[in-house]
Length: 293
Image 1 (cartoon, rainbow, N blue to C red):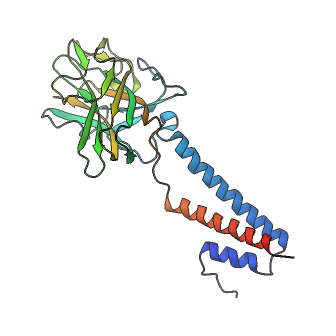
Image 2 (cartoon, rainbow, N blue to C red):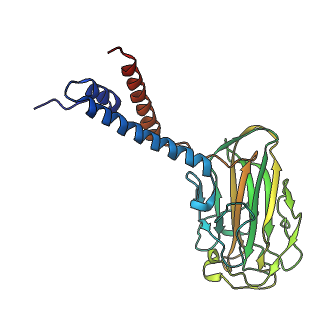
């Protein structure tokens, strides 16, 4: 029986192509097939970089959720964000979540959070995004939503970017009795747009209103100039307060750093192996063509 090849994929392919067992046309076919495969892989990697954390295709690869998170097109009171080309936004909700979220102020119960992949930023880079806080709670049950810029090294808060909090009347964003955001909000402050909000991510509480304070903020833009160069993670979160009834949620979209979207997660090692193998074959073909007849 012939010996089973033990060499690595690229070395075995090279030996196969060098052998006299294959006609030139067969060798050319294999090379073309390999080049086509690697080209497709490169296009996939390039397209991932192009769409990055856009929510049009779902939650971005590498982003991690604790609790309940997802994406949605225009739904109920939450329209699409004013972002060119957007067909969906990301969201987190307290509905059906047993996780914890928030600043740890004392009366947080259940909540959800979503964190981006690690990204590098230079001092002065502008971090921008839009958000929309939605709540079916009210009265003294002060649920809240937030966004933080975290240091990638230890998860500590580098900057509080925004927060919004349920209250019977007055300003909802920024939220009362919460860490003060350092980002610029546009508009700078908003009251709640009252009424039981119809929004599917609220689960069974969509359209419900516990008391004065239920509703939504509409889309607000947050802009923050990063203070120091480093590696960061962007975090969005929402939490119930004092009880687990009457859900709240947060929608977000249009995230850019220095005018571009956060890059996707690093490709899997197998992708790099495929790319390197393809480049090796391309190099072999080039050398063969340079040989005199």
